[in-house]
Image 1: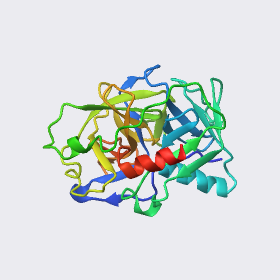
Image 2: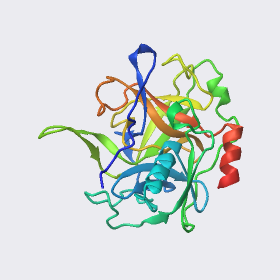
Image 3: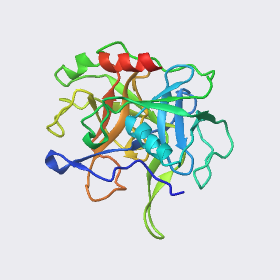
Image 4: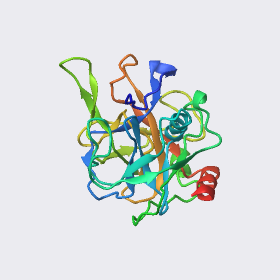
Amino acid sequence: MRRKLLVPVFALLLLLGVLVTPGAAITGGQPDGNRHPYTGLLLAPGITFCTGSLISSDTILTAAHCTNFWSELAEAGDLDSIMVSFDPQASVDEDWQPDGGTWYPASNWLTHPDYVDGDWPFTFDYGLLYLDSAVGITPASLPAPNMLDPIINGNGQTQQRFTDVGYGVQGTVRGGGKPGFAVTWERKYAIQRYAPGNGSTSGLFFPTWFILNNQPSDQSGGACPGDSGSPVLWGETNTQVAVHVGGYRLPPNDPFQCGRLTALEMRVDLPAVLAWITAHD
């Protein structure tokens, strides 16, 4: 079966010649180890992968463009369940199949009812994945309603930092033929900061958006095509304020170019979003 990274078959042209694309992951940054044990690799064996965060004993919060794609695969008879690993270094073989370590099956998932694939990123990119049985891992905490409002409505100056934790692509493998994605299956974390104005980079805005500065480096970490759904945490806490779904990148004609400008997140602190999550977790 053909392996696939969740990079779109389309791109939305914004102002300044910048593209926004779903399917970004942490590149660079620091090895996470056991800092965020509730962050898991969500593997559709042999096909694709995303990241998600455990928010209860058996429920994982991720991106809707992941769950929506899984539903398409299931309808086509190509997918029965998602395999989840919370190992800091997941064991996956060259065919993208589980290969040792600890894995948990998840046979059911749910996509936010207001998610519209064709409208991305102007949509509600939230999904839930349900483990077949509960795990004994302390989950991430959900935020207070409107927790991000003071920052978004402020003057753009804030000392608050955010931690994005994810698995997946660590850049590009070049040489010896066609370029490819460097997938290490290691959980890493990136430290990011708020991009003032929230819509200032593109000149556009949508209520679910929370935009952070993106710096793909060993020190900071940033977005790169590969997986989505990783938790965006308030500083060094375990409170998840957003879901990582994509990023702005240049140049627009290079699908292997990691995001260099900003990372696009979906707010978890919106009351309507919190209500949907808690009603279905």
